[in-house]
Structure formats: C-alpha cells, structure tokens
Length: 232
Image (tube, rainbow, N blue to C red; front, top):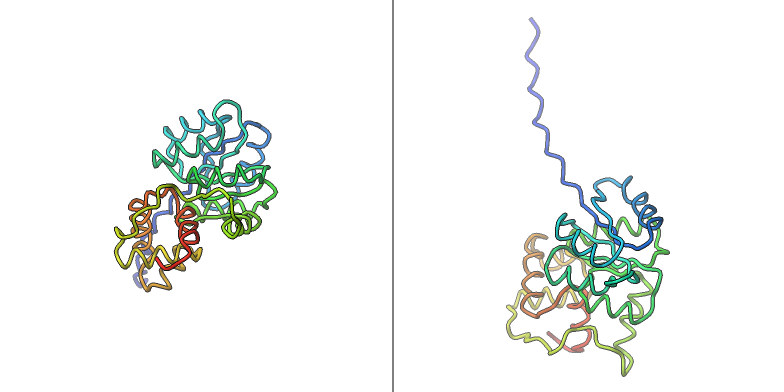
C-alpha cells in the first residue's frame, strides 16, 4: 500500500510588479529605457509619454508606482509635470535627464521629485533607483548629492526647502526621531533598524512628517534638516 504523500504547500501569491511610466520626448530614448527596465525582475513598464501634459494625464489614468521624467520636453516641461504629479499624490517621480544644471537639480527637488539621476547612470543604477523609490526611499546620483550638500555651505544659494519655515512643534517625539534620520539620508530600512521599529511604521511616520511640515518629498525633509543647522 502506497503511503500517503503530504499535501503540497499552498503557493504564495506572486508579488505585484512595480509599474513604471517613462516620460521623454524622444521615442528612441523611451525605447532604450524600456529595454533596460523590462528584463528586470518585478518591473513593468505600463506606459510612455512624450511631454509633460501627457505624463500627467497618463499618470492619472494608469497610476504607476514610479514615473521616470525627462526635464526638457515640448509644452509642459518635466519639472512642472513633476510638481503636478506630486501635488496630486499620484506617485513618486525620478527625474532622469542629460542635464545637471543647478536650475534643473533644485527645480526638481522643489517640485518634490524623489530622485534625480543623469542618463549616464548604468542600467543597474536606474533599476535600483526605481525599486528604492517605489519602497518610499529617495535616490540622488552621487554628483547631485554632493552639489546639494555643498550648496548649503555657500551663501546666496537657492533654498530647496519650501517657505515659510514649517512648524516643527507639531511633530511628536518619534516623528522628530524620524526627521533626524531623514536628515542623515537613511533609507526606511535603516531608519527601522536605528529606531527599532518596523518599516511599515517608518513609512507611516515619514508620511506624517511630510504632511505636517508641508513637504513634498523625503529629499526636501533631509535638506530642511541640513538647512536648520541645529537639533530638530
């Protein structure tokens, strides 16, 4: 008599893919970025846009997890489109551009972009950036990070943090802890490890910090901490 075989373990539902919208006015560049992303595990390019207006409309209809946004596009530019997408809380935006001019860097950060990469970034860097931003983290290319940090050591540099200065008194003690971690440039996982809380709790606290301080992104929160120059 054949012994009973153990029932197979129930299969785990597959994790939902991270959906991406590519906005660039050059079809060849959109095709190239798509070719970089589509072979990556867990990424799904769901749409393309050729200008800022189309990017906003497509983000509204498709609700992607991340938008990769060019800066220079006809009609509505990428920075304006980023500001509108972030203002409507549609999804986070990574600015991906050929140009590293200060007006674009600071304009994108003011608009609430969660990342700023140059098109010279490798395929792995772009893929990692999409995954990080979809998890709620922020990504800046190393040369951009250096420029942003140095800007706050020099007089007369445009301030990225929104005005007027937000009321820190509205934050709870734990939210202040999280804000300090954002100022240190920590990811959600690193914040969770430092504060001995779960990543889900970190995400909740980050959302509340940004809401209370009137900030559009964790990048702006990090810059605000550096700009204050003292304990928060």
